[in-house]
Amino acid sequence: MDRPDHLIWKKLLAHVQKRSPNLWRQWFEEIEPVAFDGGVFLLRVRNTVQHRYLQRDCAQAFTDAAQEATDRLVAVRFLAPEAEVRELEDDAAQEHGKNGSAQLIEARPRNATPRIGLPSGGELILNPDYNFENFVIGPGNRFAHAAALAVAENPGLTYNPMFIYGGVGLGKTHLLQAVCARILERNPDTQITYISCEDFITQFMDAVQVGQMAGFRHHFRDVDLLVIDDIHFLANRDRTQEEFFHTFNSLHQARRQIILSSDAAPDEIPHLEGRLVSRFKWGLVADIQAPDYETRVAIVKQKAKVRGVELPSEVAELIAERCHANIRELEGALTKIQMQANLDESPISMALARTAMGVETNMHANKATIEVIVNAVTEYYDVTLSNLQSKRRQRSIAQPRQVCMYFARRFTRYSLEEIGGYFGGRDHTTVLHAVRTVQSYLEQDPEFARRVGQIEATILSNA
Image (cartoon, rainbow, N blue to C red):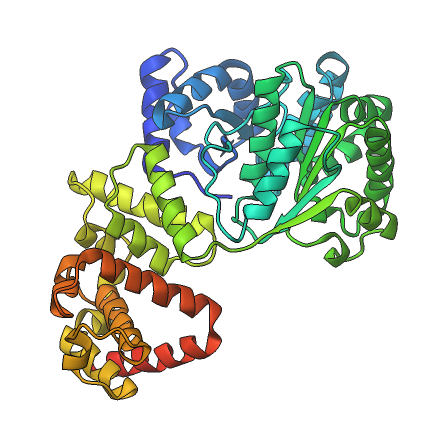
């Protein structure tokens, strides 16, 4: 879950002050932006008095301002200080009979806040960017994407349940919301409950405490599609596992679609009942792996397109080269570059991107000249510069040439055209292919990665 960008938060406040001057209060600036995820701004206030005022009189103004500030369909939720949560629980319990369980849950913030949920009005909030059209397909997610698409076309019939697992920030939530969006496109009357596992647990505990289990069960079992994100949080929750077991059975027997996501495969979730593990594997289990270099480049370009950012291909490649962990890391790098361009009031360039990503702080890399790179590579592979600049394509020459191009791209400011010209008058597409080839080998061949690591150490020690 990402913290809201400071500039976006300031812009949101400015919109509130402009659009709703009668609501404006000086202490609005002391509201703490906690997180922005799944299309929801989470804002923490100082006390319950402010919380009630904001919820009652300002929620719509802040939501409208957030949508103007981000140019996206987003929602705003206010969270009270943890020390005063109990007071909110008591107030919410009194209101429960009038407003239903959703109002109770919204008044009970948790450290683990739900990524998406049902506000008191019952409207499902989806991130408009999370659709199949924006999902970039690669070797690591192709199977999961195909499964999600099949479920969206035939909910309750194709794969039930569908269980998607993988590391943080690899696109699980994107796929889950894409399924919801596609189903709603085909049938707007579909009843969908989409909730994080933490929030499911919280609502279950609340229902038990206030004696509203009948309403809780109706809410989760009388739906066409139940989607639960991060189902691995059921671990060590015996009572909640018991309740979810019966919820699962009820939905499955009625051929209602169930979609679950997790950080781990069903049989790798610790302290999860065997009968749940078995049921999670009834349908289809698909994993999502970290994107390879080619997919990362495509993801960065797609994210830039969605944001309306003009991003040179070489900048997308730079981001993909330096960010390997997950999609959120790629998005974070793109955001830094975008902010740097806004601050400088200049178009995005390689120089600007390097500055924004902190590449310029690597003094050794900055001093790594093309000569230092060539010397390290030719010495390691026992070839000459004339060999690298020749038209010869034997593997014994082609691979060190590609490694040289890879390091020249990483450690120097030369353009693709300049690097290609240095190595025998080759064009920029040859250099780009070389960089991608080396990046791919680094991810797939540990021995190759070890050799390249030794060359890099030599380059940096002589820079």
